[in-house]
Image (cartoon, rainbow, N blue to C red; front, side):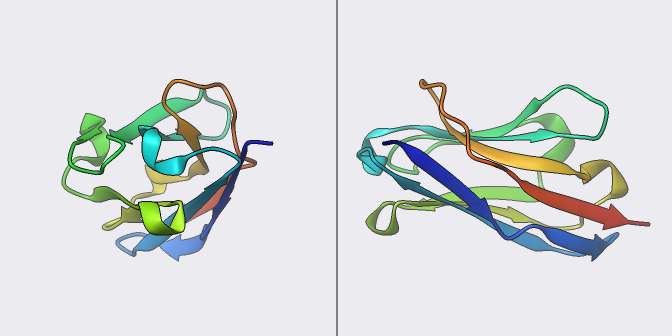
Length: 114
C-alpha cells in the first residue's frame, strides 16, 4: 500500500538548521508532485511548499521563502525539506503528501527553542 514516512525532526535552537526526509513507497514516486505541510500546536495544518514531479519547479509559503528549500531524489523515492534560520514559529509537526492524493505520513516533530 501507499506509505509516506517522514524523519529528521528534532529540537534545535533559533537560527539553527534541520533537514527533513520523506520516503515514499507503494507508488511511482517520480510520477507525483509532492508537498510539505506543517501543523503548529493548536493550529490548523498549513501548506509549506510544493515540488513538481521532476523537481524543476518549487513553490513556498511567504513565511519560509529564502529559508526553506524543497528537493527530491527520485532514484531514492525521497523528498527533502532543508530548513535554515529556524524560528520558534516554525515549531510544528511536519508532513509530506502526494499533491493530488489523500495519503498522509505520520509526521515528524520540529521544535525550535528561542
